[in-house]
Image (cartoon, rainbow, N blue to C red):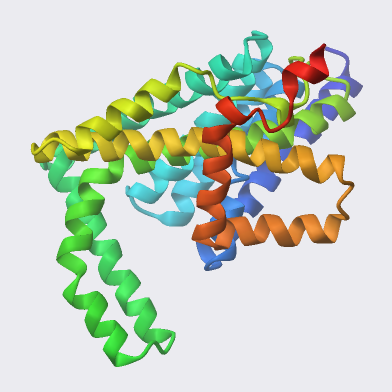
Length: 316
């Protein structure tokens, strides 16, 4: 490799590490805003793996993970969380190179992240001498206590604090049993967001990007409706384990239908030429209001029958 090219590669690696570290600092140390920034942690790894190749691109997440570990200063769930986000970016970049369908790209990325995360959790549980279920339960309990303390700091009324405190056992019970679906849905969402954001970057840099077409026209594969029906039937059964399995399944399926619903929203925003400010307000409303969120999920679910974008007509 010529020296000038090597210097450019080195600069890109440093840029990737610096950008990832900056996003990590905001994610870890700034409340509320940090949550939204954490969604972007895979993006530098994803972009620079696509630009620099596998070997040079791997340096960005490897060094960034070391910096994160040193900043946190201990082995913890937080290190695992941020490391898995870096793995997500790298795996997604690898799969983009294979030119698979968008469904397979997202599915395989999520499968890889879930598998490595589960393996790391089991290894960590063995190292500290705890069962995996106990480890997760203790972590959730600790975070619920921290959340309650944060509400007190923010000045929430004592009556509301007492109501939440009395409900902690119920909340803990539900979260422990819903953690598989919440984890899977989070990984799905982060994968989808980063896929949407990296496509214009790759095109701008004239790097390879699969031709998925406009994702605002994407629809959920029809067979998934049977998953929703099956989960609904299981909710009617008396067995508690089956009911929890059904709720977990519905959470994941609702996430997938949300992608279709938000694609419909985006399609009509473009069709009606909504200004950027109005789009930002409406997207924020969807993110913050549960009613609006469920309406979007409903759009995605019923689109199979209503064909809200008239896709077949447009194709003809």
